Length: 308
Image (cartoon, rainbow, N blue to C red; front, side):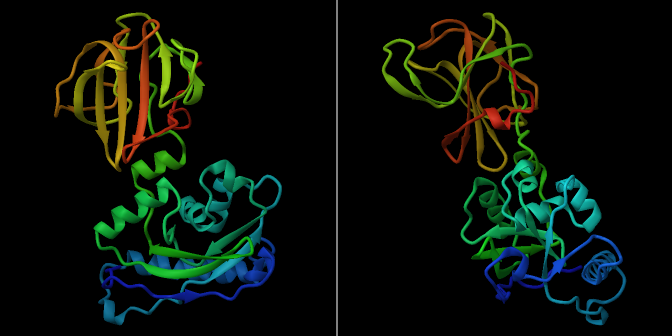
């Protein structure tokens, strides 16, 4: 469906004191429930219109305005079983319900269900994922509507991007598999966060994770990207910084050797260097950092393979 000029349509939806009362509640996800039937009819119209490439836009029926239903999850129903039963993409469900992970969505008692697929982003964004979603789509000039919904007894302003879905980076971030483990065989010896300095014993903050491995072990790029920096420092020793889409960077420190150059494009799994003990290190290991817009974040939840 061709996109209209950028819009900010305010959609206010009546609110009440409990999740079940705020919106019409579907009791079952079967044809015996009239609200479920209505939902499927609305979605069928939307999907047919979005796939119609032949009827002039002026002659197409105008889809009904976005509406929301409530549904109380039954035992055994999780994100992916609901997305199949509701005929809605899972990213639509998690963004509307402000779930930062699959586990968080699966812990919800009541979920909100929209009559159109798309992405919902808090106004203003409150998470790195929402920041990524909003910035990339505003930059592309995509149509979006501003809506106000009631979640958990509170009003929330959201941007709605009709028909949009997670891109590859957003999907990986939500599923918490954004990066591959940078060493084929290695053991995490120190985690992200507060710790005692291994040299002085003083309290300090560790901006990454340490992965122990023998001297000379190959270190691999955790994701596709481009080499932003190759250098040395008193703390990190010899290091490599790789920039990835979406404002992300990974850092590889204490290397004994470097296999890439500044500006080089690297593929996931490409060798960027070798494990060493350069800089401030007690022994051979890799210091691995993940940065989002220059700020260090815990790499562990974002690794596809978790060692140690």
